[in-house]
Amino acid sequence: MRPHINLYRVRYTNPVLACGTHLIGQPLLVYINADDLRCVRAFLADGTELGVLEAQGAWRVVPHNLKLRQEILKLHGDRRARPLDSNPIEAYIQAKLAEARKTRKAASDLAQAMRMLTAAPVVRVPPGPVTLAEIAAPPTSLAGVQNAETTPPASVRPRKLTIGTGQVF
Image (tube, rainbow, N blue to C red; front, top):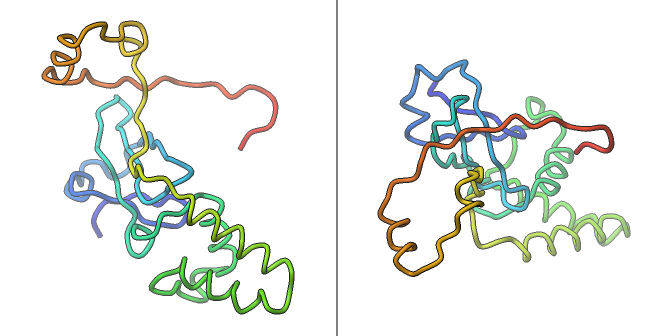
């Protein structure tokens, strides 16, 4: 089996990761856009970017957020007991549509899912980490913008963050 990552029970990979058998067992930093989980951005522990990892199967087709994916996976229960349909998002909508005629909760869930799907963002790729140089020195002239586009970006260094007390998601 080729190298990949599993994120919320969906396999993500790209050609760089798929060919990098030396990366098996290595920790990765993954940046996600919780409003669109079709793709994520991955970095090695030393800050080297692996690129954009795309979800496999039908999960890469329809834009969906984290809450909708969790609802779909909760509806399907244990994946070993029942395999997910070819398009799990469409199957979820059809199931909620059938239940909506009977219960208000299902109708509310269906309306919320439809709002999430229609309000999906256009940008697929989550932004990577912001470097201090980008924050401290924004370009002041048009010539500075042209030079910034022609120079290669510096390697990205991940920052270790601490989670304080309080509510954690």
